[in-house]
Image 1 (cartoon, helix red, strand yellow):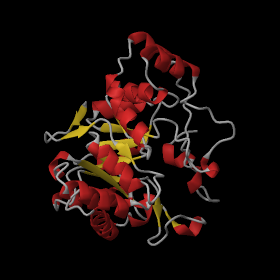
Image 2 (cartoon, rainbow, N blue to C red):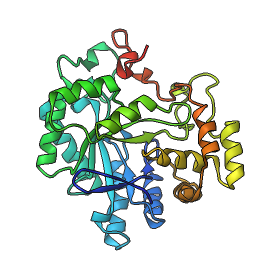
Image 3 (cartoon, rainbow, N blue to C red):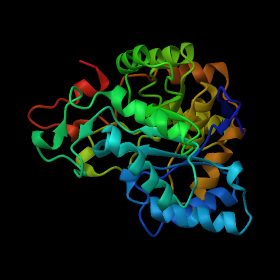
Image 4 (cartoon, rainbow, N blue to C red):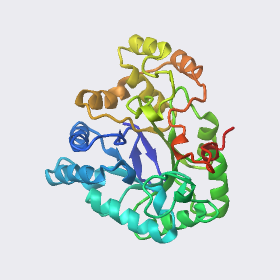
Length: 316
């Protein structure tokens, strides 16, 4: 298993189990199945609404001796309604309580978007706090405090553009150690990867397989299917692999971590076995040609009259 190495020597397994959209009643079994079959990296978030059930699974595998806590890498994320400095530590402590853990391995600012405290999801402009009211640096300084208190070993961000990373880096000596972003053959993010590499920021790819189980409200009309793409399926057939295995292997070859979500035992195991796929230069060139800057997760769910999703990614 490839790993991403941090400055202090800690290593994060490159392939993890994503838990976004994993339903209650299914996610605990998925986490246990993953760990029993070799996963050591589990990606969570408060807003997924399932951390308590993930915590039950983690407690069980630890109690049963299947794995030791120090062998696991557990990531979670700060939701947008807890960006004020005084709200960060309480949010993290709630996540730790739900996950039944004493510390996280990695804690991320989920989005560069702030809601008013208590707002689970905005319905209008009044539910937001502007980045002038709650600057990212304010939230970030509280993340640093969490790290100093030992509540998390590493800190980072998610859904941050190069522009937002550059702005944050100018204001702190303790720069993000991770940026988790949507990344797949249709959205290869080459410039962001290069920037993060130069600044010693690791990247994790979310929705690596196209997130086909998103709600209909989040889907574009006639959006392209990654898993049915002819280039991907042809390469998969060539290697006797699944399309998902090809994409996951492609992600790790580029030096990023990747967190495919599944609650299906066969696919959970199959995704980890992607390490056995051996893509060649011809495969990589053909996949490189698929880049179309296409986002499955557009950020449009944050749009109200006064808020534009374009501001999130700093794209036209």
